[in-house]
Length: 349
Image (cartoon, rainbow, N blue to C red; front, side, top):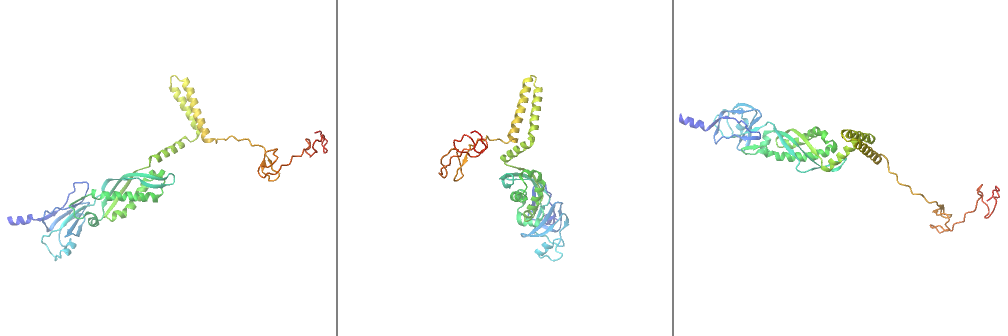
């Protein structure tokens, strides 16, 4: 009886794993050097997958449920070990439990600003942050590509890779979306869906799947935010005449609240009206430049360029200028120089 109990103590008849952590992705069942009894009970809970590995090769995969191990439900292991039908002896194998539930509230953020070309502001730098969740979608691919043979694997082992993939995809997605910087905040949900589509193939290569992606904030550079504030202020001012009336009304209210109010009322009204008038003149009326008086000129008799009246020679071509012939002061007809009466109309000169 003692020998039987000693042999039985070297065999595993129940295989299961209860996860008490929030970040464990894969747990290797600790066999303690014992062999697994054929007919042992395997319990795979919801959000778990059990994977048997024989001498480094992935064998059978068990979905959630309760199993009695036999050659019928371990076809790959049976083929690898060349078991004959009805084999019921103990055997050695590694058993890995893969956690397939969602890993929630994982944070991401841009360590360095992301460059973006914007139609309104040109080249700008953006910073963003948020949260995401993922799960193991293909346990076999995950064991083969990421996990390896460690005894325990947590989310910390893949967070760095996932965050870098997120930042890289975010840069491409912002460039392709062509959403103006002023409209980014109104399109967080749409951008999140685009990010899920962009991240899907990168995660699938590792056996993972992004279940959710949330953009909490996309912040603009300080100088761009100041420019937006100035633009918003101009939009708030709107009609400058109404703004002047508003300033006057505010001055009246302040003066009414002031016990010694008469002088304050006058000063407030004057200041409000003056401010409104100055803003209206500055923004609505174009500034007029004083016009310089133009000097009278006469055309050159040779080249036609304008010259000062009474010039004897043209400063442009040097031609001598003819002396103007006298005309009648009444009818304007030419008369002889020194004539006292006009020969055409008889008017005295």
